Image (cartoon, rainbow, N blue to C red; front, side, top):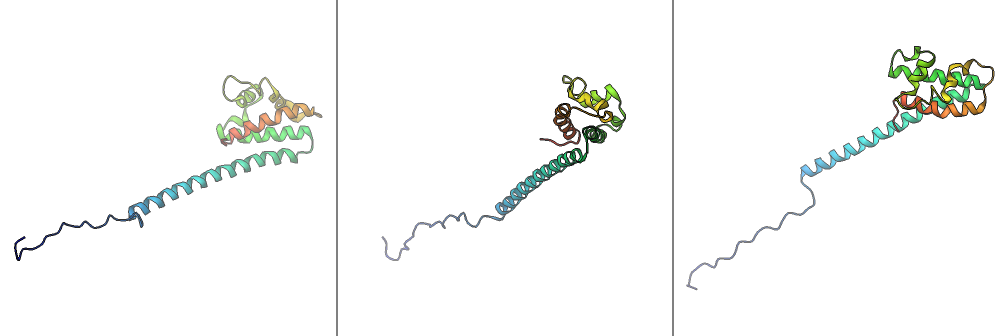
Length: 152
């Protein structure tokens, strides 16, 4: 080396930035994802609560009826109220047209050819066989929830 020459050293790079604390964009993304997740949970709970309330309305109304014919009449009234949500003129349908409306999708006929036929005159009879009503109740409850727009 020559006298009076400068000794040069290699350039030192600064250390790489640490992962903590994250940049502001990552904080914003975390808050956004948390908000979307919380909103999804809120929607799911709201739907579940709505389904429980609608099902409880059906169950309570049927349970309050004093006799089997009164329970059939209550089921029929609830179905007609729910049918208005799907079609404003559906509650005025009579006889077979009403049962076909309740059947819903083509291919199945649980109301017009099954236990649902009890809705035609069950509310006007003096007595109803409990087995007939027991067959009607889950069918009517399921259709009521469908008409009310409650998904499973």
